[in-house]
Every structure is written in C-alpha cells, then in structure tokens.
Image (cartoon, rainbow, N blue to C red):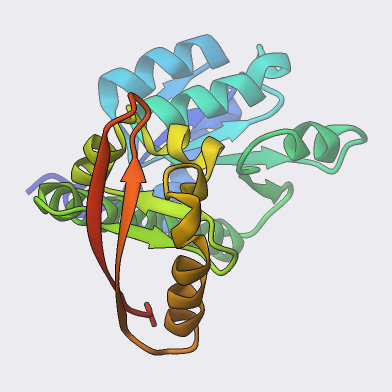
Length: 233
C-alpha cells in the first residue's frame, strides 16, 4: 500500500527548495501526503489542475505572490480545493484578503506541527461540509424542478425566493431573477393582492391555506392558479 494511501494530499507552493522540504517533512509527520511542489503561483495553478490535491498550502513569499489572491480564487473556483496561506503578519495582507468572497485560512510563521495539523484539518473539514451542502442543493433543485405544478418559496416580506421551472413557464419568465426583479404582485391581478397577502400572513403565522387567483404572464397570457400555502419550518 502506498504511504500516501488514505492521507489527505497537499500541494506545496514555496519559492525556496529548503522551505518546501521542511514543509514536506512536517506534513508527513502530521498525517498528510505532499504530492507536489510549485515554486510559483502560475505553476501552482497548473499543478492544482493536474494533481487535484485535497488542499493547497501556499507560502506568500513564493515568487508571484502579488497575484496569489486571484490565483486562490481560481484554484477554489475551478478545482474546489481549499487554500491555506503560510504568512507572517504584514501590513496590507488583511486588506487584500478582505476583498475576496471567502478570505482563505492563514497560518502565521513560525508554527508548530500541532498548529499546522489543526488549520489543515479544519480547512479540509469545511470543504467536505461545503461539498455535502452543494450535493444536497443539487438534489433539491432536481426534485424541485421536476415537479409538474408551480412551486414557489416566498419570504417574510412577500418577496420571491425560489420558483421551479413549471412556475416560470406559467409566468412566461426565463429565470427566477426576472420574476424577482418585477415582484410577484406584478403578475397577480390587483383584485387578488389583498387575499394573497392575507394567505401569506397566515402561512408566516404557521397556518396552511388555499387561494384561487388569476395571474398574467410576461407575454400577456392569463391563467387561473390554485395556491396551497404552507409554512416552512
């Protein structure tokens, strides 16, 4: 059996060969399997795609560090791989990280094996949870859109949160965003607005209800709908 079997794989990004060797030893000792060493951020992007590691451990002092922030987003977006930075506190780094959608984890040097293990394990755990959530959302969306009747989720303030494919077809809309931009009440005939709001208020209060009302699509088609409203816990 390979010594790397069942161990999380780590791609090291470090400009100095000695620093990379030290990190490799620490990773093996901590229960991880280093699978590659990139000396630049550009090379890290290539190796991340070729090796598909479980995590990228990036030294900010590596050549090309000026573009590490954009490279981090590319690695995370394209390969779904978490990135952990090795860095010493320096002026300006926090500001740069703050501009990212999800600021990456950082481990300040010098660090112990225990600190290294803790940060890497946390980052890997968070990625596993994200993957599970993404899979759950994909399954929900598949079931949601497969429903032949209109299904919608409405927020506390009558705002549309979600609508399935059948509902969009009834409203003659191409996307949920298009309906959100106009609001549901632009599709419901005015004489039913009060009844719709009352039904929604009851659902927010924990009651189920039924309402028949008429809508008009974006291309002018009028249809009768029967809505069953129920609260979501």
